[in-house]
Length: 85
Length: 184
Image 1 (spheres, one colour):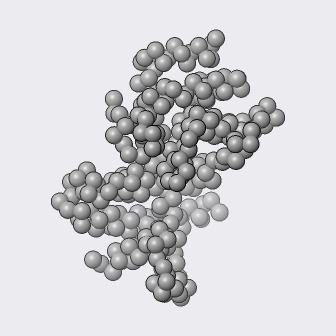
Image 2 (cartoon, helix red, strand yellow):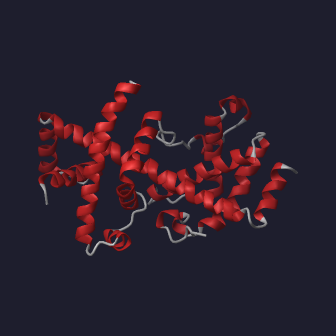
Image 3 (cartoon, each protein chain N blue to C red):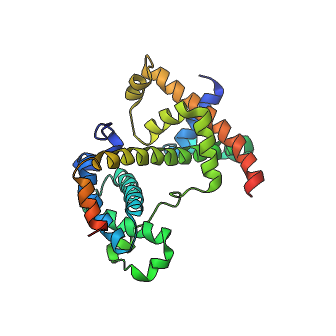
């Protein structure tokens, strides 16, 4: 695997919190002296956060499909009776 | 209709109730609250769906303490979402002890910059976004991802996952710097 992919894997391990002991100390030290690595850690963490937002968008879309489907059933009347009693 | 029951992250947690049944049962509870606040059915739909998303996330995280009272939780979150949306209602909503302990994730309403960044990634790397969100947030195994995306082995899927992270990470880096010029 390419060096850069190894770096991605190592950063993932760090972000997951599964890096421990001497490996963690070495990684933190490396980050302190290597600003490019520090930036990559920060950007990979930002990417994971963006993925969460993307996932939420997808779930919302799927919930919308459920809603539309339910509106074709007696669900519509029961909801209308809440807003127009 | 695409059913949600087949989506691991989209059943209603440990009880494994299909989302459609859950929706049919729980939506009226939130709708009654929104109607009581003089909101519209669109407000109710929006708030309910957001509350479900937060509920599903919390339920996934709370491995040791599953959320037992789904309706109470949803209604509590719905109240918080309503307050966030219509802060003028603050004096009209009383939160009980349980509800006051609930909260909306800080990043639930992304900033303009974050939305633009995501929009950009959606236009340039949708396949990678899909694969990575399936792994990180739908919690699919690499075997399932290999099958779903047509990789011959788990190893190929894993390599692709890392390539995707690398690709999107670079795009995030480049665009973040660009957006900082505009928004900060």
